[in-house]
Image 1 (tube, rainbow, N blue to C red):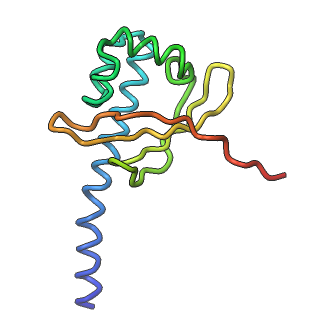
Image 2 (cartoon, one colour; image 1 turned 60 degrees about the horizontal axis):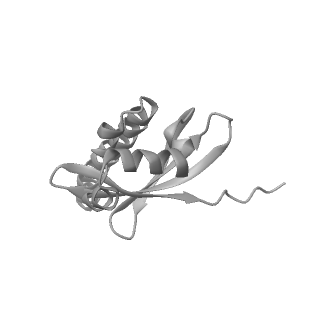
Length: 133
């Protein structure tokens, strides 16, 4: 019984920070979606990692990239969070986004933790899953 309680305590200690990380990551991504919906690219740009901010330089450049390259992110009809796991350089949050035409897209958000909290370090459009009949 003692081993079970020790194992349970270790598992709970690991699960609580992971759940907190997931909540923080989801909050960042959801807030960025809301900022895009409002065309507030300056606020959306605040959620970008230092690498992404350096790459685009200004909120206007960043906004143009999102409008042209990720219209489903710029104007999502809805979104929901799926799996959170390890990525190449941080954590990887999978998000299902429904665009205004009703099409569903899977995106992988690469997230890194900085001294200013979780930041989005890139978004990858994933291929649609195979659909079996």
